[in-house]
Image (cartoon, rainbow, N blue to C red):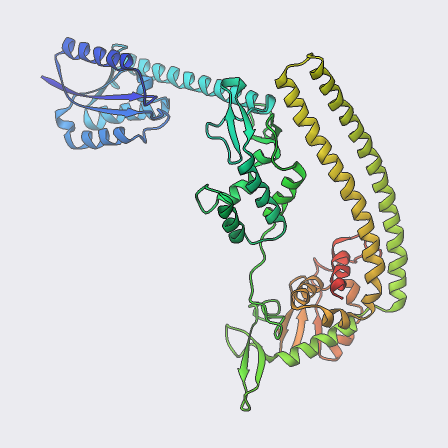
Length: 523
C-alpha cells in the first residue's frame, strides 16, 4: 500500500469548522479511492501562501527529508492553498518529485501533478498561475480600497488607535476621537522637544504624567507620527501619488509645529564633546594627520596646572601649549578684523539687498493674506451649508479639517515672513560694526560660541602643524590679511579650489555672512 502525508493551510486562524471538514472529506475520499494510507498531517493556520516560510511547512520539509523513502504523495486541498507564488511552487513540485520521488496531489481538484507527464505539468502550471493572478487581483483591490479610504476619504484604518485617540463607530462611520488626557501628554512632548529638553528628560516627565506606552522609541514615534497633525501617510497606488494627506480626525497639534519638529529631527546631531573653558578648541582644532586634537592639563613642579592640546595618534605630531595656541589664534582674529571702509560698503549693499528682499516678502505676504481670506470664505461657506443641512456631517468634518489646517499654515507663514524681516535689519544694524574687532568678538563669547565661531570661519577645517595654524577653507571676507598671517607665523591659508569663491559683501550668499553676524551676537 502506498503512503501519503497531508498539508493543510488556513488563511485565517478562526477558519470555520465546515471549511476544515470539507477539506478533510475530500482527502478521505481520495485516500479510499486510491487505497493510500495517511501517515501524518501538517497544518498552518493564519499563514500567507506567498512564500514557503511557514512553520508547519518547514516541519513538513524536515519530515520529507527524513522519511521520503516511505512517502509517495503530498496531499493538498487546492494548489492555491499550497502556494500563490507560481515560480516557487513549480520549483517545489519539481524538486519533490525529482529528488524525493513524491508527487503533489490536489484532492479537491482531483489532479496528480507529474513532472514527467507534459499535460499534467502544464495543468499544474496553469493552476498555479491562476492562483497567483487571483492573489494579485485581490491585492490590487485591497490596496485600492486602502488608498481610497485614506487618501480620498481621510479615514484612519488601523485596528489600534494611536496614542492620544480612541475609536468610535464601526466600518466607514468609525472615527478617531481625541482622548484629552493623553493628548495633553502629546502636546507636552512636542513643546518640550522644541525647547531642546533632552529626550531622556522628556520620557521621564511624560511617564510621570501618565504615558504608558512601552519601548525605548515611544517618544520618537509620537514625535514623527503625522497623525497628530491631522495627516495620514499613504503609500502610492498605481499612478496615484503617495505621501501625506489630510485626515478627517481632529489634530492634536498644528501642522506648522509638526513640520518644524520633523526638520529638527532630520538635522544630524553634532558630535558630543566635553566642554572645558580652558581648552575651547578641543575637538575643533585638528592635527595635520586629520585627527582632532584632545586637550588635558599637566601639573607643574609648583602645583600649577598647564593645559595642552595634543594628538592621540602620537605625541610626535602635536603637543602644544594651550596658552601659545590661544595667543596665536587671537593674533589671527585681529588680522581678520574688517576695515571700517569695507564695513560701510557692506552696510550699504546689504541694506539695498534687504530692501529688495523686504519688497519681495511684502508681495508674498499680500498674496498669502489673499489666500487666507479665500480659505476663510470657503470655510464659512461649508459651515453655512452644514447649518442649512445641505451637506452630511462626514463631508463637513472632512472640509473643515482641510480648510482649518490651511488657515493655520497660512497664518504661520505670514507671521514668520514678517518676523524674518525685522530680524534681518536688527541683526545687520546691531552687529555689523563689531566686525571691525574680531578679537573682541571671540574673547567676549562663551566657550560654546567660540567653538561655533571657529567652525563657521574655517568650515571645520582648522589644523595645526609645526607651530602654526593651517586651513584650506576660510571665509573670503575675513581672509584679506592672510599674507600677513603667514609672515607672522600665525596661519597658512592654502586655498581649496572647490571652496574658493567670492562671498558678496552685500550678503547675497546669505548663509555664511549671516552666521558671521550671528557669531557677533555673543556680546
